[in-house]
Image (spheres, rainbow, N blue to C red):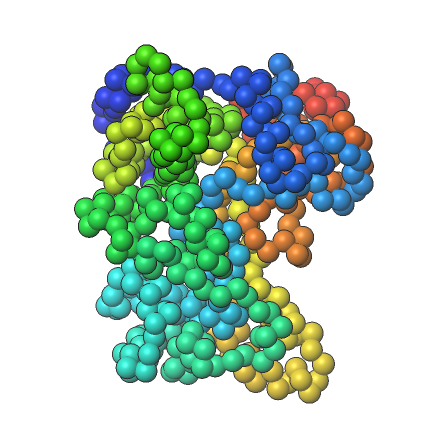
Length: 496
């Protein structure tokens, strides 16, 4: 995360002009609204194995509605919003909605080598063009570009000291489907479906994922040809800032876009008579009631302002804490101004207040879960290694040079961050009865929670927010960033 130089405290006019609406948006949901929301969510997902309950002392919690044994699947939770880390996009080509690997083993490898080569070339001063058009070029390569690309290829791979360059043309052949690797059909992947707006940045595993992402948030965040040029330019500035500072801003943008699009849909349904709202009195009440309903999924997450709850880095002295938190606030304000220039909606104006923006980012800071999806490339090379001769020898004549070109770190998993509505309700314990754990069959971005011991019906399901093997004081220090002191049985026993 890159910080900017300290200035005077940022002032967002919307914080004062929309104070009433902001207060309503940030008010904790009532017990009734909370129970209704999670009951509807669990019913929609046909999940009857858990329940979500509100406790006056500990807030929300997830409880077992059936008995679980050690190793049982407790929950697969679909994310509300999620984002792949920008640095990870070179290594992993995944669906922008469900984060499943897409294309083919050949495309995954070829694309990674191509983009890594371009990155290496840029760091050595080679002029290889902008990265914005790369993803499009990868899928639209033809023979007319072979000579140019091969020249680039030489420049790219000669600079890498720990990898063995491939012969010219091999990378392009992997990407355009001309080179089929042995036994790769054993690892078939979903096809590549482009973004509906043609942005060349988002790709999907299916039309259904493309449509779902478009309707959820991407229609407001797309930089494709269907977007207005001014809108596109503003968005690109926002993305550049997020990539250079903290890509948690990407999640915040998705959350705001998600809420705006839900608001528009609710309003359209009202105008068509499909929904009824109390529209008596001031029309502002009518808009606020719709906005509150659109905001409801985000309202369920525990929130504190980002600059108040973010942990103080180890290299920042406690005497500089106030300055550090002011810089964090300034960073958020800059991001918000860029986002506002791109997607501002007057009817949803309160969403663009610095107070709301800070609470959204703070919600992700305290409730998000690492998004991890294992790469099929690793499985492919392990499969080749496990073959019996002579199949192994024949296959490795082709695969070993590619493995040498990839280097020791030949397979990288998809990495990102996401907010999961059910998993985020799980409370912490230093002796948890469940954990987030991806099984071999879990090949998308959903959160997977597995029981680590027997769980009785009615028992609360807990996970650990920190490494539970740390000493007592270190655990408590880490948990202080979440705003509480743990008093689980393990901590009671170990407390000096």
